[in-house]
Image (cartoon, rainbow, N blue to C red; front, side, top):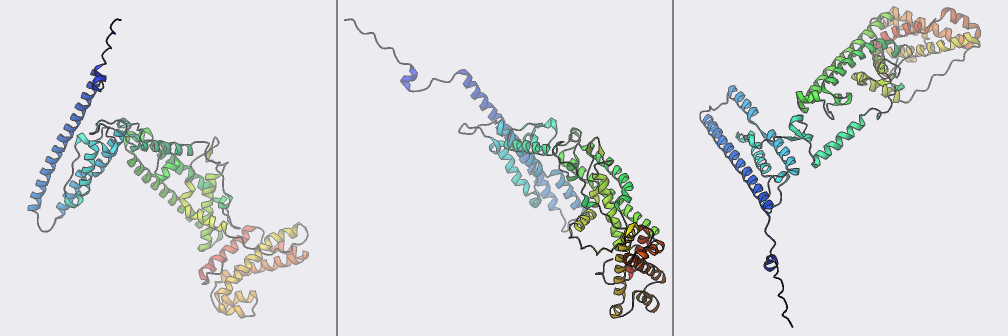
Length: 491
């Protein structure tokens, strides 16, 4: 039999139990990575050495100044220290550089550690050095040693969630970047057209009384609203924000023009200043319109001064007029089906809140209705006569409060009025005449309600319209509000 051929020899890798040596490409990548790490470490060492030398020089200069310092610190030295502190304090810059470099190192690690794993985030050597510098910069206010920030350690680019200029920002894919993007998208969807409900005019904020209505002041309110909206729209266009963002100084994303001029912090400060100035102007205009309305009613009612309650009613009516012209769906603030700015009436927010509080109170029981006589004349007598009797009863309660002795007397209403004027001198003759006129109207209304035969006398001698009743009531109320000491008696 022939000899068996020899078996082939195993490869060297199987004999030695080792993997084949790396190819030339892997060796070049490893060498490039080692060179990059060496360059980074050399740059860091140079920058740290330069910063340490500069700090030693500053400490020496400061020690020299302290050596020749007097016992008392002069004002010039305080000013010098304040200016030097503002110029050389770098804690904020160091913190921003740390955040920016840590975010960049999360997705673009440059250096590997001893175990060969990449140093990402805050483990980056530059971030560690910045953390040490921040720890030292915190104590600057106590020891006077400033920590300089070398240019080599500053961040060349910033993540987009830090809201820097577009040419110095990059799209971050870190967790903070994703959170920022989700919050931005959410807010944009909330303010997007079509997401907001239809603007409705709340009838509870439209305040009127039996002698005054908010509709008397809508013309002046529209003029003030147009001026306010014009200034607000200019401010919104300048900074590229919406109305809600302008009022809160918290913009989701500022416009391009604003981003080129200043950063987000400066824009927020400018918005706060602009909105504060605009609201101050609107508040002054509101107060001016209230004063003008009060003066007009004093002339109209022939009184020297309206009572505080009457002034409050005028103020609430003016505030309702501001609200109505803004939220009226058929008003001038709606253009092509879209509402304009809605913040105008809230310059008088305290007045609108007072109207809402009054509307939320439980309504008082209505006074008993007068039994109207038959026919149209009787119905007319009942509508005006009911109010005359109600106002007369209120007036007599106020008059009785002026003199406690009248509470147990047997004087009728006519004698009580004359007593307060002739014997006590509490009310004037003009007030007495107006009180007697209201008393006469009350007697006529009472007679017309009880008998159809008295309706003709009511129509002949009674008030011809509601305005005639208003003039007498407001004039008497102005005088009694000045004299009456019992605040629990309401007019």
